Structures are given as structure tokens and as C-alpha cells.
Image (cartoon, rainbow, N blue to C red):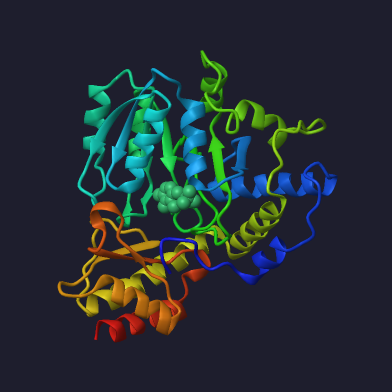
Length: 357
Ligand SMILES: *Cc1c(COP(=O)(O)O)cnc(C)c1O
């Protein structure tokens, strides 16, 4: 019940342990196509270029940034926590000129704040935002901002690592141009893959690049041949075959539950947890909290490390500590995917009461 990995259902673990087959085996290719189809359903998109990058969430960030943008391009990044800051670092390593819009950690951006920065940097090619800032638990509404960006002719990049599978991520309806996620948060699959999706507009921008993508592994121009290929699939790298088995099963479980029912379950468990935490005097950090990540201030005089190790040793429950400027100041309780159950919420509350005492 920390910031991920979340609990992995036994069905997914069993799928992971199925016999490894070749990445060009017709059975595997069929399963891969089906996995990409299911990913489109979970991302709620028709984007043909939707697939799992063979590495963790950070690789999704690197893939999106390095394909959509090139050295010398300008981009705006909204930073209200650790992961927004990482997006700046990744872009700068690719030679992209970054205009930062900073906000207090724990706050969300308003439409006016974003409109203002967009008008100040009209030549920026893209604006990037974190939908679910795992370091602070802040939820960022996207729909209105996206509309405004497209009126200005800017591409929209979204980090949906901690929202996909727990909160609605409406890639088509919100006109998101490039989005990435990870398997170990609300998808409840082990860490190791980064689902990504690119809009047709994004694909056009990539095809019109002046220079080739400045890394080889994440170049979607080449990856497309394998992931979208029908009769001829060119070898690019060997995808982690068993992880694709696992992701396919994790997505099947999500679609069996139904996206709406799943979002409702996350909302309901968040409400229950929040009521319990507030009853024992713990205050939420963000103004607009996620359901999948619950970030609270540690009460004064309480030893962060002692509480967390007692939670783990006595109850077998992992909760997260703070990152960077929030280290030692906050706890982060994840309600992600398979972990978001009433039994877990009630146990984590009871355990916290005991550990605080
Ligand atoms: C976890 C996380 C990442 C990075 O994912 P890894 O799988 O750890 O590489 C990126 N962005 C956000 C918002 C995250 O929560």
C-alpha cells in the first residue's frame, strides 16, 4: 500500500510463469496484438500507436519526450512535485529548451495559470503535465487545459503513471497527444513495462522530425514496425515475453471489472480511508487528492521510520515515506488496483492507530 508496486493478483503471477516462447512465435504475436488492443481500451483511445515500452515508467517518459521533441525545441513543463521535475531533467538531457511553470508541492494547476504560461511562450511545441503526482498525491484535471492548448496549436504530453487503471484517463476525449504509464501502479502487474500511446497528430510530428530520434532503443519509428506490423514484423529488440503475458492478464482483469466500476471502487476506498485518517487527526497534503495515492502530513513528534518499519514488521503493510523536500514529513498510502479493497483500508487504519500509539 505504498506508491507502487501494488499487489499483483495470482492470475497475473500465474500468467507470468507460463512457458516462455519466441517473440516472433505466431501465438505470441497474437497475444501482443491483443495486449495492445486492451491497452487502447484502458487508455480509451483509437490511437494505432499504443504499445508497452519494454522498461519501467521512466522509460515511458524518456520515449515520449525523445520522440516528440528534438534538440532546440521549446517545451513547457508544469512542476508541482518530483515527477514534473524529472520531466524537466529528461528534456534537458535531450537538448530541449524547457520553460518551467512551478507550483507549490501538493497544489494542482489552474486553467488560468497554464493559459498564462502558454501565452508567454507561444513558440513552445508541447506542454507536459503529470496527471497523478505520486510524490504529493495531487490530482491534475486535464480536459479544459487540453482544449486551450490545442487552440494554441501545442501538443499535450501527460504522465498517467499513477492514474491509469485507477482514475479515468480519456486519451481521445481529452485530446492527449502522448501519454505514458507503468504496470506496477493501478494496473497491478509487476514493474517492467511502460504502456504508451501517441495520437495521429503526434505521429505526424514524429515523421516530420528534422533529425532522427537521439536514442536507438525508444525510437518509435522503428518500434512501430514491430508493434503495429501485420504480416512482416521486423526484429528490433526481444520484448520481455513473460511480462507481456502478465500485462495481458492484468488488463483482462481490469476490463472484466469494467473501467467505470474500477474507478468507482477507487473513489469509494479513498473516501473510506480519508474519513479514517482524518478521524485520527491526519491531514491530507494536496488540495485535490488522488484516489490512488493518499498523502498525509506526519504529526509532529512522530518518528517516520519507526512507524513505517513497525507497519511492515508487525502487519506486513508497506506505506511510502516522502520524497525529496517531503522526506520525513509525509506518508503516502497507495490504493492502487488490486490493493484498493475495504479489508486493506480497514487494516491500514487499525495498524496506523496502533503504531501511532
Ligand atoms: C512511478 C512513477 C514514474 C516512474 O515509473 P518507474 O516505473 O518507477 O520508472 C513516473 N511518473 C510517476 C507519476 C510515477 O508515479
